[in-house]
Length: 167
Image (cartoon, rainbow, N blue to C red; front, side, top):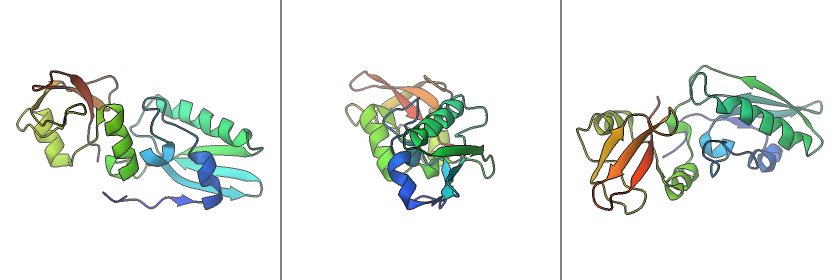
């Protein structure tokens, strides 16, 4: 999977951005998640454009605070601007982020059409993060957060979250 968007990030800021994690999925950095639209250093100020995973996502305030703290720890001031359009898409999650998500126990998002078939129970295509079986079914279209659904594996009987596709 390749990123659909091309963030404009000053390369010197990447080591600091990599220190900031998603509070809901702490194994993912803001770079893995693809929520950083732009990050540049201008006249001693770090300007960051941040796109929420969905409107009203409560994690965005925490991420903004964490970004400001990470840069403050390096002696820099960060200004955060929320950018709503174009809307964030699960296509923006990096391949590394998808792998980290799965290792953490959350099935990464499928394509939009496959996601719909899986969530409506029409196809068994969401892979269990424990045993790898696709013999799984949706338990609830809402999981531990609004962006996830709860699935259960019919082979190993373990429940797991699936990160829903957002386009």
